[in-house]
Length: 350
Length: 165
Image (cartoon, rainbow over all chains, first blue to last red; front, side, top):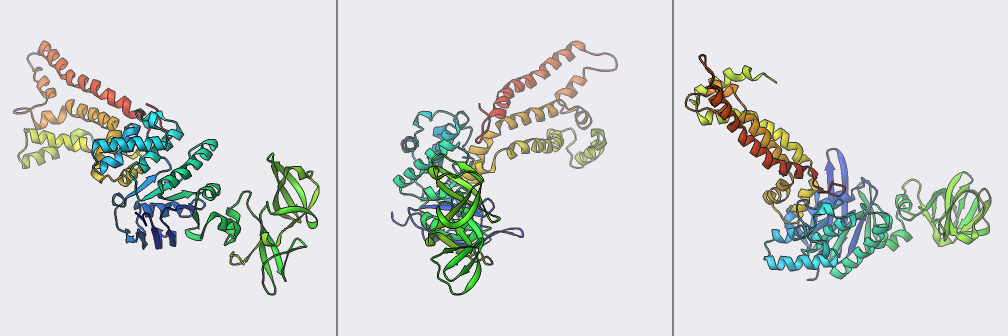
């Protein structure tokens, strides 16, 4: 079926008493897309997911799924599967019973249920654990069990609420890749909530970035990385985060700590700006921006230098070979197109 | 909390008014008025221990509220229900004061029946002892039955980080 799993949020507002958790959220998700809701905690991304699932009702606004207004439709009738952060496995049932539960609720014949359970368990590689109880599984296995329970029903929407946050670092990387493959092979629309920008960058086809109850930017990971809309996003996306330093713009140049760098921005006149340069975009070059090396974090292949640039803290990532000494002064430059300019008052991109 | 003696008179007046003195339903009503609040108070903490996400997961899996309660919630509070059954049963089974005042002629619980073996002239020790043993039997059986559930109910791992069976 085409057009399955299309989502549209229209002016969604959610109030918790006086506090506005969501202040008018609009976005669209295309069928088959892996869509990430990214933002710091308390930014409204989980609330958005809960409203989409039907677990919370919005104070104002409409939710459309596949073109139909589902704002007042019960969670159980929305045909949505969800993986919770805590997995929410039913502890008194075996893995097989857990996976079978959504199918039992739709009164499928026993034989079909058994086939579907086997199929789902095989897909997430837990078919040898079907007789265990959730309490007897490791964290990674529990997570797979929760995934299997979500995919067994072939729901039109697949919601994931920080599903990887309870796994250890290595398992998280493995599961991340598998999750993406699984979503591709099922061709299902997935909505993924995370506060980890790296997860969102690697998994998502498109993402929406939440800040304080509002969507600040929607786009592909590449777009958001290359052209962050605001200072907040610039500081949030990328690791280590972008250097954001006060500067002065004049005639195609931006002056940081007394040194002029060429930019590709085309504006008339002079004004105060906030200049953003990613740590990886800065290169060592003679007669550039001078800074003192305060600390070196050597990562093996690359190194991150903490710099003091005339009182402003900056960071630069350089390759391991060019390592200066701590305490020495280096000189750097950046390509014009790598310098982002923001308005210090409105915080928006110039 | 009031000492039980303090509310016997009002209970007596109420029961007399509706003509339920010395009847099964009268005694059941009185015991219910003690046991129900106690049972609810005891059970609430067991229900509250179940993460709310469990219910939400069931709704999203397509279960109605009733089926969620029956298939997901109740099985997880089995231990709590067993504990409550034992406490409430003991409360009612061992009650004497209300029973001896509000019943005793046509209907009587085992505690009041036992008391009839003690009189001014003599105490029938043998019968008293025999009934005492018999009266203990249901309690012991209930304890054995409930123990299995109590131990199980306390250790089930619900979400990640929960205990193991």
